[in-house]
Image: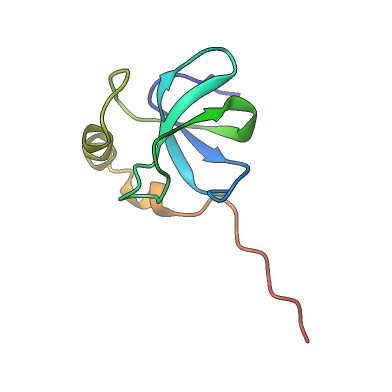
Length: 98
């Protein structure tokens, strides 16, 4: 399993942003990281998140620690990962038949 490091692409596992991809911008401590989508790309806003609520992917984006959302968006575009980031990692639940 990939480690939590700056630039690691992750999938959110809980909360209103479940299934959306985000990028680790800073490692706060062993339990928390700062992530962003950025909101203009994936809909995930910048926030502190428990590492237990994230699933790291093998994808990595070239970033500096604490990079602003604009730099994250440029790095995603430069790495040609925009389409990958916009895809939901978890399919939506099918509607029950009536």
